[in-house]
Image: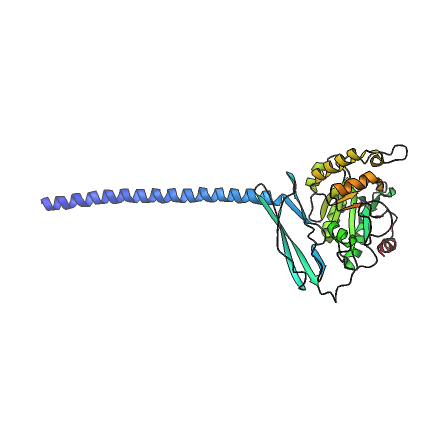
Length: 357
């Protein structure tokens, strides 16, 4: 009898202990699942934050994304332009990759931009062309200067010589694409000027002045659709300039200097830059470069410049500066006052083609 009672007691105790252990195991399992779920939610939140931060980073390659190099010539590292759409220009970034100038073939250069928790990488394709196959430019390079881009039905805007219609811009840029034009960077153009770098036979630079609202609204989408890289010369004091360079940041547009505050009305027939002292010019150019986060190029307002302005271009290490004057950039051109062809609203497609020849 005592043995049966002992056995029963043991069984009861075992059952209680087992039940308790089962409850503990269940609760522990639930705790583990809850902790894993919380950890996953935190990870998803971090990943979302990183993605949103990365989506706000826009990177544009300076020059042609498909860079062409003549075998044996030094590769010109033109760099890239980065913009955080919330914070502004990203001026430091990492460059990876190398090009063997002596070995024909395809190479890749990576540009890695970081801002906060965000990260964006863009790749430049570089093709080293055998010397025997490379057809160099020998007639000079056209630099095209646009201003505004208006809707085709905007009869008021099109009266201005500074406007081209969307359809006209599309026809012109499509011509460049269809005829396989190369879009060099300002650094490549400078090396061409200095006689140390060859550019493909069909090469052209596309630029837009002032950062006008209709260019931002109408012109940039066309550049993106046709994948044509361009330079937007921005005025620092223009309304919402800082917000616009962030809001309208594009993979196909880099922002360069059109002065900070020397683009006002003429006084006695002279542009503001022509009336400024050297120190005023120096401070103005530097202020705008700081805002834009780049110092590769300058477009003189109205095409007006002075010896003092040219000196400042040299002092501040600006790669190329442009005026308004028909003609082409050739080896030996003065990099402080390069010609640009203004594309006007009356240009036919034949006029446009002629400007390239």
